[in-house]
Image (cartoon, rainbow, N blue to C red; front, side):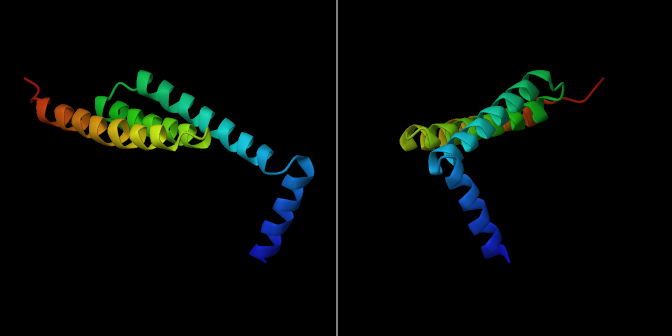
Length: 101
């Protein structure tokens, strides 16, 4: 059943232009996700949620680089910004929160 659905999906994709169209659709979805995560980063009032949203934005930006045939840039984007910088932000946020007086 799943195999028939996958075959039918590939037939539809190939009828519209093949793999190039599928890649463009994936890129548009990733660009939309990156924009949404960037807006969420700027609008969240909770700093922890903003840092997590920033990490998701960096990871989706790395995925976009990967689909644009720059895998090393995408990998470094995901590892450095999506990993190390977000961990630094989250640790600073959690360590500097003081008790309300």
